[in-house]
Length: 230
Image 1 (tube, one colour):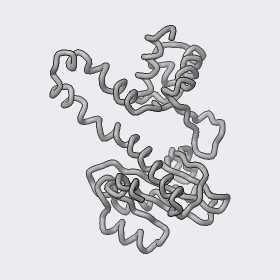
Image 2 (cartoon, rainbow, N blue to C red):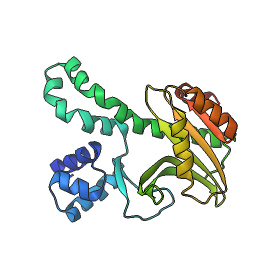
Image 3 (spheres, rainbow, N blue to C red):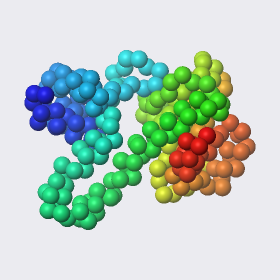
């Protein structure tokens, strides 16, 4: 590859949170048209991927993400701590990295949850027979703010699955479920099924409400990692 320094700068920019083309361009200090060419090459190589909100084939809301988690971890944490790591101060390097690991793992967890839903579908155990799934983000005209849904999967024009993934040490409370249900109202599906995925479980209020609704699945991390036994 020519210009390896620019490729590295672009990957680092994406890994550290610059996901839109204008943000990437500003971070690396190059014209958007120049960056676009290099980004397309990185997509072709499978190092980064282009994402659009679920259901939108072409969108100005497109963002870019690191495809491989090893690349994502390396470019997020190693370059800025390289001098420390090279001197063998691994404990100090970890101390600096540790506070940011939950944020890093939250994206990894989303992908794990998607894989879990695919396993359910292929095993004939998913309540929604989707053919694809993805993340959605856009404007909430009611709240007049930006909204995001971690997982959205459509069976047909009347049926869809909505999911939220929480990689936190705290138990997921009722508010998370209520927010997901409220955001699902931005879509016209008549039949909706909800999935909550949690690292550390759920509060009693959330569990009770999920039972009342009848169309909610609460999934723990331990259940996800044992899904290969299905």
